[in-house]
Image (tube, rainbow, N blue to C red):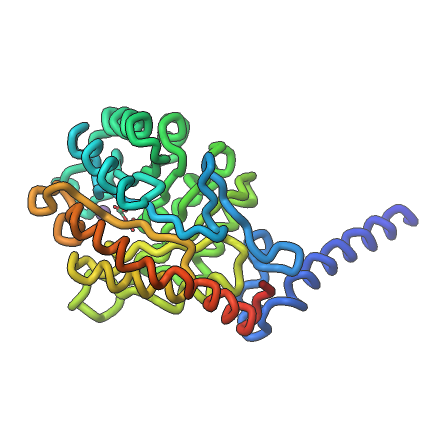
Amino acid sequence: MFIGHRLQFALATTVQARSETVADNVNSRWNGQFSCYDLVAKTVLRPRSVVRVGDIAIGGDEFIVMAGPCAVESERQVLDTGMSVAMAGARILRGGAYKPRSSPYSFQGMGVEGLKILSKAREVTGLAIITEVMSETDVELVAEYADIMQVGARSMENFSLLERLGTCGRPVLLKRGMTATLEDLLRSAQFIVSSGNPDVILCERGIRTFETATRNTFDVAAVPVLKTVSHLPVIVDPSHAVGVRALVPVLARAAVVVGADGLLVEVHPRPDKAFSDGEQSLTFDQFHSMMRDLDPYLGLRQQADRSFAAAGGFD
Ligand code: PEP
Ligand code: MN
C-alpha cells in the first residue's frame, strides 16, 4: 500500500515535471496543440537540438544546403552534380534511388545500383549523402549507404517505417505530408524519437491547397511555428514547394529569412532530360547563382531566432 502510494506519487511528479517543463514554457496559444509531443517540443532544458553528420551540424549556426538530382539516373549525372554543388557550397548531396512516384508507369528509381552510385559520389566529392527510404524492409540496406535517411511526403504517416527508423542508427529527414498539419508532422517525428532515434530534421516542402499556379503551396509560417514549438532543426525544400525552376531561388531566400536551418534543392546537369522533376530542377549555373544570392541574407537568420523567442521560444 505504502509502496503503491510512493510509486503513484513518483509517477505523478514525473508526469507533472514533464508537463511543467513543456506547459509552462511553450507559448500557451500553441501549447494545447503541441505539448503532447513532448520529446520534440522545445523546453527550457532543450531549446534546440543539433543533428550531426560527420563535421556537418544541422540546426547550428551554419546554414546547411543539401542539393542534387531528384533521382539517381547514372554515375556521370551524380558525380558531375555532386562536384558542382560542392563547389557552390552545398554540404550534402541528395538523390533518390527509390522514388515514390504517383504513377506505377513512371521511373521508380535505380534501387541498390543507385545507392552504390551515391556512395561513390561521397568518396569523390566528400559530400554527405541523403537519400529516400520508402519501406521498412529497405531501412537496413539504405542505412548502409546513406548518411541521412529521407522520409518522403507520401511516407510521413507510414508508422511502421517511422518506428523502424528509430533504430536505424542514422539521422532522419522527415518531410511534411502534402495534407499534413504541423501537428501531424510533429506526431510523426515523435514516433521516430520515441522509437529511439533523437536525430530528426523536419522539412517543409509545400502543402496541397486549392492553388494550381504552383505545384504546392509553400507554408512559409511552418518554419517559425516549428522553430518556436520544437527543438528540432527545420529545413525547407523550395523545389517541391513551388515546382517551377524560376521561383526556387526566391523561395530559398524566404526560407533563410524566416529562420530555416537549411535547404533541400533539386539540381540536374540537364533538367530538360531529367527522369523526374526536371521542371523544378536548377541547372548548375542557376544553383551557383542562387547560392551567391543567398549570401547577404544569411545574417538575418539570427533575427528570425529572436522572433521565435518573442513568439514563445526560449533562445
Ligand atoms: C523528393 O525529394 O524527390 C520527393 C519525392 O519529395 P516529396 O516526398 O517531398 O514529394
Ligand atoms: Mn523530386
